[in-house]
Image 1 (cartoon, rainbow, N blue to C red):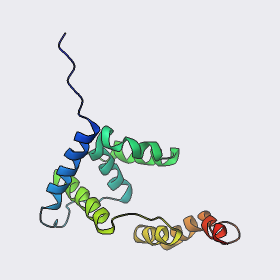
Image 2 (cartoon, rainbow, N blue to C red; image 1 turned 30 degrees about the vertical axis):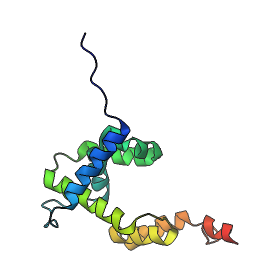
Image 3 (cartoon, helix red, strand yellow; image 1 turned 90 degrees about the vertical axis):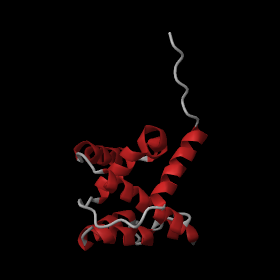
Image 4 (tube, one colour; image 1 turned 180 degrees about the horizontal axis):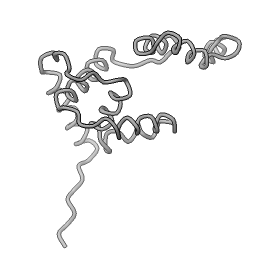
Length: 143
C-alpha cells in the first residue's frame, strides 16, 4: 500500500493563506459586483473559502443559532463567481489590516447593525442585549 500523502503543517497552511491574501491585496480595487450578497451570504462565502482547515476555529466559536443560520446560507447560496469570492476576501483582509485589531463594544455592534438592518430591528436587538436597568454588563462592571 502506498504511503499516505503528508498533510501540510499548520505553519505551511498559514503561509499559503497569507500568500494568497497578499496576492489578492495587490490587485486593483474591485468594480461593482454582479451579485450583491447579504451579510449571511458573505459569511457563508467566507467560511466556504476558508475551508475546513482554516475555518475550524471559527466554527467552534459559533452557537447553535449561528451555526444553523450560516449552514442554511451555505446550503442555499448556489454558485458564486471567483471574482466575487476574491473581492470578498480582499475586503476582509483590507478591513483587518486597516484596523490592526478588532474591539467589540455595544456601540460598535449597534453601528454595524445599523448598516444592514432596519432601525426598528436594530433597536429590538440592542434592547435585548442591554440589561433591564438600561446598562449593559460591561457598564455595570465598570462601577
